[in-house]
Image (cartoon, rainbow, N blue to C red; front, side, top):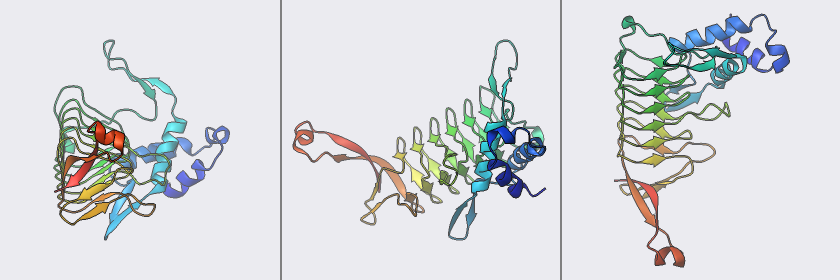
Length: 260
């Protein structure tokens, strides 16, 4: 089976045709298997940048389309209902992933490299890819298709946003050796380059410019490039004074990420 070709063929079908296609069940199973083993990724590093694999996102969307509601309860006290194509991930001791007891959940179709540590409670969604030695701390979220590098610390209550649709949109990318501080939020296709540090409470998204006090420049999202935090940068939560008369009279300011 050529998985990419089958995904694109099925994705183009009308929903009324899709459910009767003889290959769709096998293709959905292979999508989940390949995602779980890290064989396919929503985005992958290239020399000097990253490439979004739209066809992989199409495959994940197929799983949502084909799924029907199923009872996924563990017992009478823990009742869960979700698409039958999107169960929780089955992990064994051989995977060498440490999952501390206490209410965490990982959806099937997420890839966790050996040495990943998950502190409770945390959640990792389908299509996420997490590199070796990374810690996902308590109350943290790794959203759909987010790409997290090696030896990253996603601190308590940090949110790494998911980007599934539109399928061509860039996922959030956190490269190797990044420190994401507590209560940070990284959304809308932002890319954080390796060894950067995000101080507690920093919010990064496509609509918020980042003011670089080290290089006297402003980093912005464009149609061609995501908002990108430079390699080794240290970002803290700052503010900018509101400039109109009413804002000044009330001493107002807006939150602004600063590189220091």
